[in-house]
Image (cartoon, rainbow, N blue to C red; front, side, top):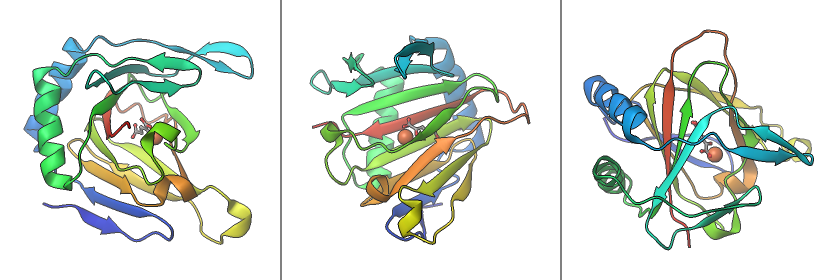
Length: 197
Ligand SMILES: O=C(O)CCC(=O)C(=O)O
Ligand SMILES: [Fe+2]
């Protein structure tokens, strides 16, 4: 299959639900879960330190450092598996990436809150390629400025092996999140490939 665009005003979204075969996705899930040096980071929320509800890792080219919630993240080097994935994702999207943020949602209780990936180092129209492995989780998008749009939020199911491309004005006009679920679907690993300037 190929990337198929999803119509949404003031956004540019495309999804390939079968970018990797189920067997490839399962093998990668096992390899990355076991070999990536996962961290459980604290972030400051209203002046209070809290642990993020997920494990994370940041890999990339040496220059691709990233400022995020007051943390200066220096990337770990590409592993052979991540480097190979980067090349496949670049070939499929026609875009270039110099870093990848990995998120491991251990259970349905791990999650990510509403945000846009709009840090200045990503530039004005960031291209972000998001690869999902493991349990299918619901990815939600809602308008950033609900008072000036009649558009409702949308939900996308992201199955194992799927590739979601967010580009153009998406980060400027929309927020996204990965809510908790009680469906207890097992672990999910997500990789977002980014270009940091
Ligand atoms: O896990 C996902 O699908 C979303 C991850 C995400 O939004 C991010 O890493 O910025
Ligand atoms: Fe994001």
